[in-house]
Length: 274
Image 1 (cartoon, rainbow, N blue to C red):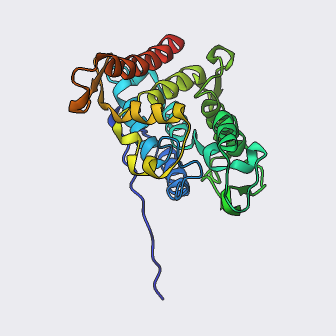
Image 2 (cartoon, one colour):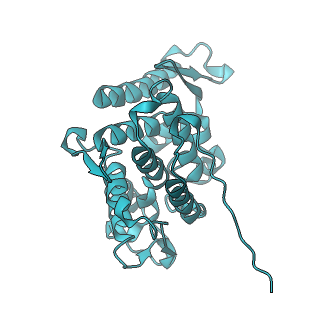
């Protein structure tokens, strides 16, 4: 008789490396659990919220922590990384927003409702994942999040995920575990900024945009990402590099619209995080 053992080697960037082998194993379980969750995306006309988005958020967090990585302990790193993987779960769970369309035919209003609530839905799903109740995603797909061996961390990951958008960060209380402080407010602020900085062309697939009739506001959001060549984070400075079609070479109004829109959004998040 042969036994097959499947190993997952999760690559964590240096400024977020976790020394604890147990915490690394827990994180790997979470990453494996949600790896295929986003195929297909329920809200297909929004920008990417899947596993690739999470990986880019983690890369942003690594850069934001350059030279300051010692401000986080192992437990905080685990919670931050787990939150990076799970913060957008709510985008794939319409039933948690009170919307049930067995045929998958969601209206624009449905999708806006799900998107507006998705951070709170994500938190609810994470907390429910250790309650013994099954987590039902779209198409009645059941999901486990990988907290089976570390249920005590779920509530912290839920809180950080919940605060990754809109909510006032100062209302989130810090906590502790195993005698170590958990700076949850800082973790939520980092996640919010790392999420906001995933703002370049990799976040969109224009082939999908061509096939969908979507609101003008969403189209602007897509094109705003598409025109960003890259976002650089070096030495505490954030630089945005834009690329525009040749036909806009003399159209200052068009290029200024997208530049100001993107810069304003990032500055707004920076101000709030500060």
